[in-house]
Length: 455
Image (cartoon, rainbow, N blue to C red; front, side, top):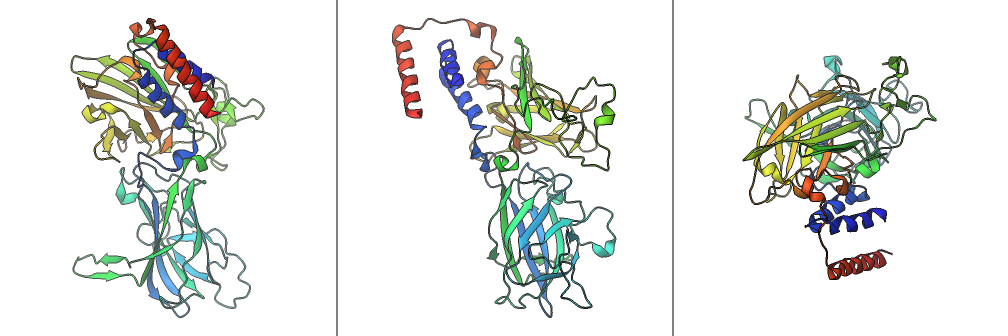
């Protein structure tokens, strides 16, 4: 409520309160559960394709492939975990390219023991370096999947499963149910399996096409609201025309926890290595540097220079996590001037156009073997680049915070933006303007109507 009155007061002292209102609503929306639908990647999903390739005496052999059709959200180590529940009394006789985490109770079998007898098996990918006789195509990456834009060749993962005590025809087979996908934690919700047209495969010489005996698909969608209770990144802002550096909002990702040793680390501590878990422990436990925002990652947007026909921005990504490197990281930025991006230095770039008529969203990621790894907190724990934009005379301005991004994602998660009323403003933007009694009264009445309707 206090932020609302602050917005009303701010509107009095600027020519365009509409632009402030727009930024206010965008900032407010980033804290709601509506993130289950991603407006910057509306069709992004993970599709699990289950292809039955042959029948056996008591079941079938299938190849299961996980496709990451998300443009900028990837699955990093320790990788994906796929689960489901059998519809009948199926067992898994053997697997290639993957394995179940538990065998289950197979005591009723004599002689040939199945790979897994659990009603609800959980499957993980095999690690790199697995013997060739246990591999199939697109397997053994440790469960890591790249995003579709960064590298579609590594955005899929497969394993082969031999299922017993199942149907042996298209009419007697029952599709599994209750699919779950962790990547590596929660966040994905999977729909029911749907039987689709059998997949088709082209031979290596491209002279023959074969097809699966039966195929079903499962679609899983991501929600940041389900993935974690708190944000994972924040944004700070600065500019050449204002000495103010706007930091990440205080407690953006959490407040400093002094009651639990090791959860917050002072960078000046003389023995910082002693509080970082060794490689034998959980390397993904939260262990971040003590800051006012307590976010593992901060993105800083600095409006650096102004030219006659161009303007320049410097983007810096800083890792405050002492316990994690971010491999194949990516950044998604929404700003109206991306339709006139002229040059970008030391980052890869691709325009994202979820709505073809609007080109205001860009995906940025590191150059392979140069800065595609964001190292853990320390002297090397940052990457940076500069962007050069051409001015569009019809829209360009430094007023009202226009030069700052509307939204930023890091690795697919929406970052916390500073409140719009704290943005660096032009020096003459702080001068109070005369307001008539009528306009003041009108604004106050509108505010009261809003509050009464909200209540």
